[in-house]
Every structure is written in structure tokens, then in C-alpha cells.
Length: 288
Image (tube, rainbow, N blue to C red; front, side, top):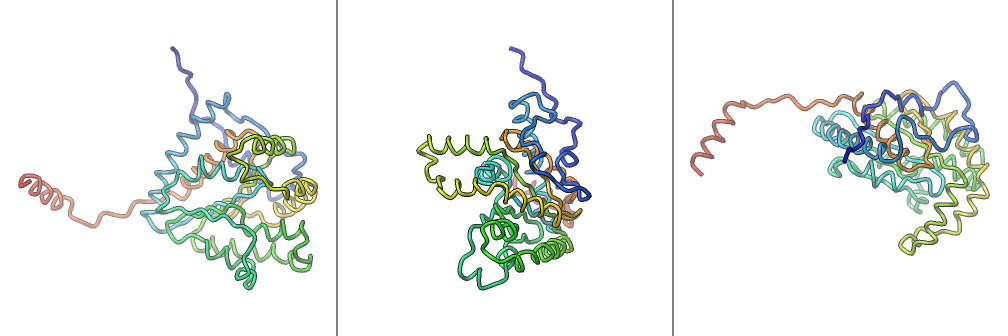
């Protein structure tokens, strides 16, 4: 049986393909929610993702041991956009000793007693660590805006505060990657149906999801403003076509891997006498 031979190092720049251009106004309505990139189908994409994840694991280990740099990965999407699946299949494969996921939900009463970035800053990674934000500080200019949880006079000032916050992270050698998982209304509804038909997924059901569908245009406009106002070289946005889950996983894995490669983490210099350690080992082995 001849197994397919796939190119697992395709000459395709995922960063360039999906990075939001800071000089252009984004129109999500005109942005693809589905593509296959350089892949010849799902199996090819899965094989690429597996290789990329293995390399991410190695690079994350080097980052952890180096203890000088850190990484924040922001995930934003409309309901059923695939954040949990992406974490489970790709990002969650990193060593939990140096990586933690923060699922930001509606703020608690204590969090509301502080500024909107208080809980976010507390989740920022220490040197050598990775933080994954499942939703993030951007909800304070997205949901807060669309759901009218605060007046415009409050949320419109937050764009600049967010930019300052991300610049502060960058100043502390923290990379910031921001992914918007872009799905179509039709694909979202299909995923809602799968949840409804699968009892093991009933815990995900929420009547509020359908109310949000009625606000699709308002959310789209809010996201487009975010991409225009909070997109920098040090904290870029990537819009990931997410109708095909396997492509979503492959493209995010490729971008995270490239970011780690650019960080180029180094193992610490050896400051012990290797020959002496080897002799101690050989002595211990001979006396065992």
C-alpha cells in the first residue's frame, strides 16, 4: 500500500497570509471563512499540524529553560468559533509547567471593582512562560460595546489603554499574538446543531448564543474597529479562516511555531565541568 507523500514544509507564509494589514481597513464580510492553503485536504493538514506541534513543544521547552522571554496568545471568536478545540488540539499540547490557559468570562464583583485590565495583567506570563487567553481584554471593547454594558464614553477610551498595555508587555520581552477565528453564520449554525444532537455537548447549549446571532453585524463592526485601532507590529492580529477546523489548527500552529522561531530561545550556557560529572557518573555506575 502506497502512503501519500505530503510536503510538511510548504513554501506558504501563513503569517503574511493571515496578518491584518495595519494600513487597510478590514472588511470581515469580504474576508474568507474557509480555505485550504497549501494543503491537499484534511489529512495533509493534520500531518502538518502534528509536525508543527512537535516543534512548538521543543521551542516552548527552550523558552522555559532560557527564562528570558514570554508569549501571550489571545483567542477571540464568535460563539462556536473553535477556541476550545484549538486549545485542546494545538496550544494545549505545550508543557503545562510553562503554559497556562485563562478562560476569561464575565468579570466577578471583585474584578469589577478594579480597572478592566487588572485581571488581564494578573494573567500575563512570567519570563519563560506562555499564557493563552480564551477571550481577553478585547471583550471590553466588543461585548461591552455591543451589549451596551457601558457607555461609548467609557469603552472608546479603552483602545488606547489596550495599546499601552500591550506595549508594556512587549517592553518586558513578551510577544503578543492575537487570533480571530473567523467563521460564517452558516457554519456557526451547523455547529449549534451538532451540540443539540450530541447529549455529551448539551452543557455547551446557551439560548444567549442565538441572541448573539441577531447581533452579528454589530459584532462584525466592533471587531473591524478593533483590528483598525489595536493592531501593531509588536502585537499583531491574525484573522484565521475557521470553517474548516483542520485548517484553523494548521495555520495557528504555523504562526505560533514561526513566532517561537523568531524568539530564538537559547539553552543556558553550561557552567559545570562536564568531564568531572562524567567521571562521577562512571564511578557511581561501577560501584552499583
